[in-house]
Structure formats: structure tokens, C-alpha cells
Image (cartoon, rainbow, N blue to C red; front, top):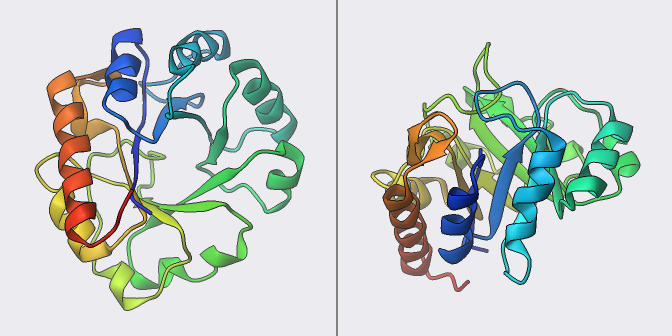
Amino acid sequence: MSLIKICGLTREEDVKVVRDGGADFAGFVLAPSPRRIEPDRAAELVRLLDGSSTQAVGVFVNEDPAVVREIAHLARFSIVQLHGEETSSHKKTIGLPVIRAFGIEKTGDLEGTAAFPADFWLFDTRDRHKRGGTGRSFRWEILQETEPPRPFLLAGGLSPDNVTEAIRVAAPDGVDVSTGVEASPGFKDPRLVREFIERARAAFSERGEER
């Protein structure tokens, strides 16, 4: 796999850049965040992905699974990302593919992550106050020291400047960026988005993977 996810989209022009750049996933945050949008707005933005290969991902934190399912239906999300302390029962109730996010700080933080019945795992920088969007990386070598469940996406402090090295060191199945391609919170820089996608694709290709 060589997946690319651009998260925290709030504007039509940013969704179009992500779509036209060929990202695999476009992420929309429906949890407390500077990048949070309302469900109706998410539905409007997801329509811009019609006819493309980019899939819409709804990001939630400790939301009632019935509410997640309702919003996902309204916005036509293809995938749901759970970024809190959700339990394994959430996936069955939601009824969609799930990306399960875990905060990583040390090697032991990977223990037990495979027990969650996810379709993808996402490893992000652990923070006591934020669920993603920290702009900080964790030590990628952790993912070499303990075999993580697969397929997994790497997040946390990625940018066009370090995504090549991140893919080389962590060997993820995909990468996820938000802060590292922004002009300001919730407002993407189109040049950075394009550069991130291009450099990630090149790094995956150099690693011997095909899209």
C-alpha cells in the first residue's frame, strides 16, 4: 500500500487541490478542533469528490456510535476515523470501514493496538490536550522496534520536508498530514499540499511499492 491522506479540510478550494492531486483520502473533522466543520458543511464538501478516486473520511472523537453512523450517512463518508477512547463495539454499530487512531510516545504504546478490529490503524503523536493536529512528530523508530498491526498510517508532524524520511524509517502503508500543509489552522496551502503528495508518492515508489 502507498496511501496518502490530507486531513482537516474546511474549504472547497482545498478539497479540489486534494482531489486533483490524487490523494487517496480527504479528511473532515467533526470533533472539537480549529478544523472542525458541521455535518451539513461536510456533506457539501464531500460532493466535490464525486467521480474521483479520493475517499471521504469523517474524523470523530468519543462520539456516540449511533451519531457517527447518522452523520456518516448524511455526509456520505466512505470511512470513519475514531480518534478517542472508542471501544471495539463502535465499529459494528457504525457499519463502515474504520481507521482507529492511537497516540504514540514510547514503544509500549503499541501494545494492544492490534486488538481493535480496525480496517486501518493510525499512529499519531500522543498529546495530553490534543487529538491530532499537534504539528509534532514522535520517534518513528518505535515502529521498527515493535511490529505494528497493518495496514497502518503514520501521522504527527509530517510535512513535505520530512515525509520522505518518515516513509523510509517507519515503513508505513500510508501517511496522514494536516498541520504540515497549512497556511493557518484549517486553511491549506495548495503548494504544500501538492508537494506533500508528490514527495510521498516518490518515497513510496523508491521503497519499491506500487500504488
